[in-house]
Image: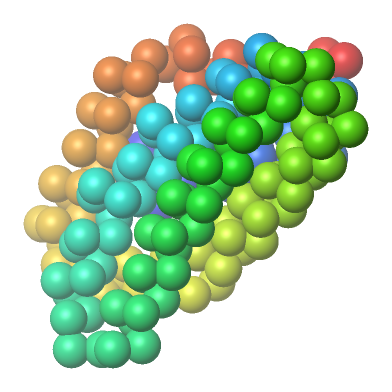
Length: 159
Ligand SMILES: [Fe+2]
Ligand SMILES: [Fe+2]
């Protein structure tokens, strides 16, 4: 699978997950989901996709600014996710539910912006860099563990 295909498939799966189960996501499920977002999905973008795009579009201030915003959204989600886990583990149910909904809305909006504004830019990136990125992304997926990767989405429709 190519890097953009991996990321787009994740985005679609996240939207489905939100529609089907996120309101009922318990803290353990959220922990695995958040782990997947931070340790895999955002990592593929932060460590592979964004740096290549920054180089390819180094003369476009608008694009560089946009990429910075995407990096900082990831940081925001990382912090918000830790708080949600804390609320869940200390039984603060109202805060847990409220922040979880907020997290999903921020994430889905962020993903839509990436699809609209960032992913189309990938087409102009040098083919050899694209291939290298595809390999690195597949490598991160296999390091994360394919079973762990798919388990998050296998939960859709089970509750
Ligand atoms: Fe992202
Ligand atoms: Fe993304």
